[in-house]
Image (cartoon, rainbow over all chains, first blue to last red; front, side, top):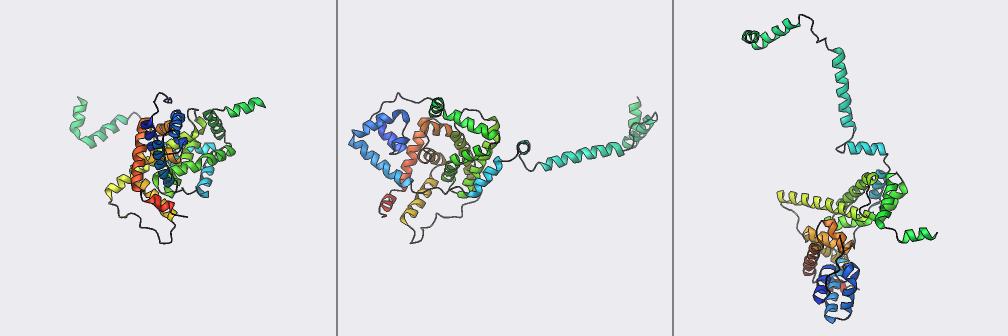
Length: 150
Length: 196
């Protein structure tokens, strides 16, 4: 974003700056700072506005934030020391511990292998058609077989 | 080494930050420590001003740095680290304030304004409490504008960028916020100035 330097400095603009940014010129817009300081030096009215802004600044500076706790700093640094492969896992599964989806995946693989090895052979010999017809008859009734046969 | 000195003096802060973050991405713990030492206090302070709660401010600050560590390997030299951290902190604070509002809408508040402190409490502590309360009562965008410009001492362009608004809009928020604070704290100035 480009600095604006085309704005004319006058008492009205200086009043807006004091109203918005307060009395400390280090907080004023950089491109208007020099002109505003020069105007302030020559205007008693502007200095009165500056004094009012300074009173509020003084009040605002009273409450000081607490210092970050040592526990917070330790936690932040500990997170930075995490090995990169663990960070990759966290990025991959940010919802919770990675062992949860990993366990589910492993269980699915084991179950698939167990079914594949332990289940009876589902490839039917030549008599398979008869078995299927019998199963359809039991499930849907003889009419289904008759229609299917047509 | 004249060249080195000149390079340091004229160093682009964005490039300098990018070099530091690259060291973090490479697993350099001293770079992590340096970056945390440089920015944690300010980020934590901003969150505290916005949320008014030390515990929540620590949560926000921690999340900001965790995101930076995650981002370090693919950091692009487009912004200063301070700007990036403040933008993340600002967004996290706004999210938390919105969640608070949603909860407050469902559950009527059961807490009154804080009672005056004990008689022995110093004037300065009472002023601090009053200023914190007045800031907390500001609309969140006015509070964010004042926190970024007055407390964090960021430039107007950078602060507006963090909030995703124009500089003119930022000035309007600042002026309205300061007027509201002046009205709320009118009697406090004499109280503060009266303290020896």
